[in-house]
Amino acid sequence: MSEEMQLNTNLEKLAADTALSDPATLIGIKNLIDKAAPLVQAGRFNNIIDLLSIISDNIEFLDEAALEKLLKWVRKF
Image (tube, rainbow, N blue to C red; front, side, top):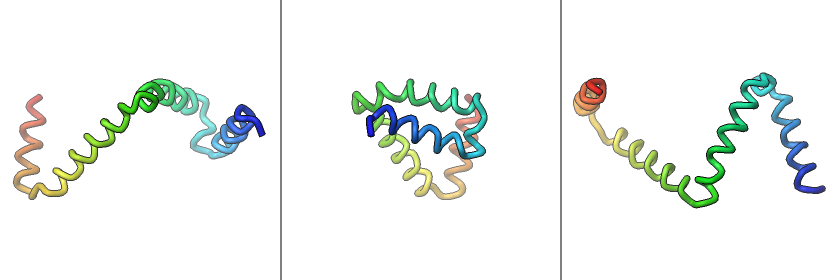
């Protein structure tokens, strides 16, 4: 099976899902993929994932008081 046929088959499977039957959703997903593709190809998307991991780890280590203080600081901006 050619790569294009496989892609079309995968798109048909995705479109069968009720959440993805909305044309606006499909357009949005295509736009997201188009914008993310250069980041993935250049290996820069890995940096974004690493940054999200660091943020997530730090949130896990914060106690309730520190988290509230951080949220107050963020809300100022």
